[in-house]
Length: 295
Image 1 (tube, helix red, strand yellow):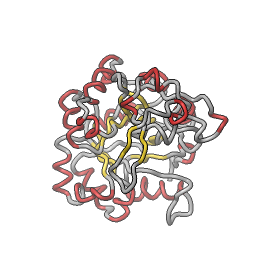
Image 2 (cartoon, one colour):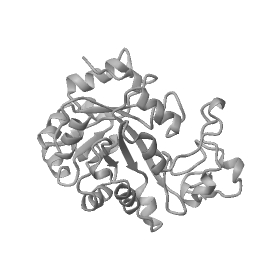
Image 3 (cartoon, helix red, strand yellow):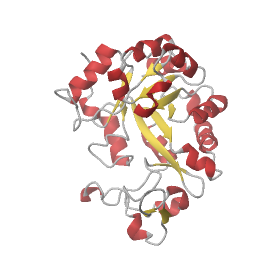
Image 4 (cartoon, rainbow, N blue to C red):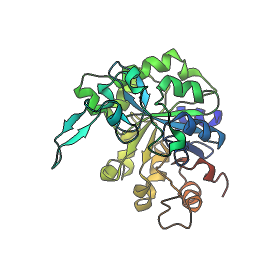
């Protein structure tokens, strides 16, 4: 893993294949929970992913969504604290993470939505995630929904930089750190604030045009050290892997699930093709135990 970190920091392809546990071992335990992170490490993850949102009182917490209702019982605990989202055809009630303090969020059950046996699971702060994973695997956080926070005058990059420096993660050889974002401005700000932290540009299918030519990847390499494309992009244009490597960018596609192997016989076969035929540097998977270390 230390060799892999050195490679990422040098903006060159990693010499060994990396397993990034997507929201932890999220096929087996509630995403971004202590159980999911602990199991991911036990199943051999090289990195554990954290999606990071910001509370009302400025604390980074590990949760994928901008809102709380999908993965917690916020509607029962705080029934009147919703905001009506009128952007769609019908108004929808939303409970935004950023409208609640950490103390309020810690009252929520973040496990029963998946299975009653996880009742009482709490949302982790990023600091708690660091403490849980540190020295056992790397950290692969994503700063979520940057435009939403910019509109509210919140700077997640600054908060992230503060906690990275507090924990001396830029120079901890036992805990590799990689920052990821779909947002170019976020990664550029991080490049200026945290020069030693590798930065991965996430790319969704609708934005595949950002990376579909060698010159475009060279441009991305001016402010990122890797790309994290949706796997469908690489299936359509596998040459992207070689173009990215030529630009000294790592390539880590997402997301590989046993429940969704697509045209492949199994998720192992799917991951093998991407890792050993297309030549990507690592993959995001909900199933760390199914990661193929060898061909």
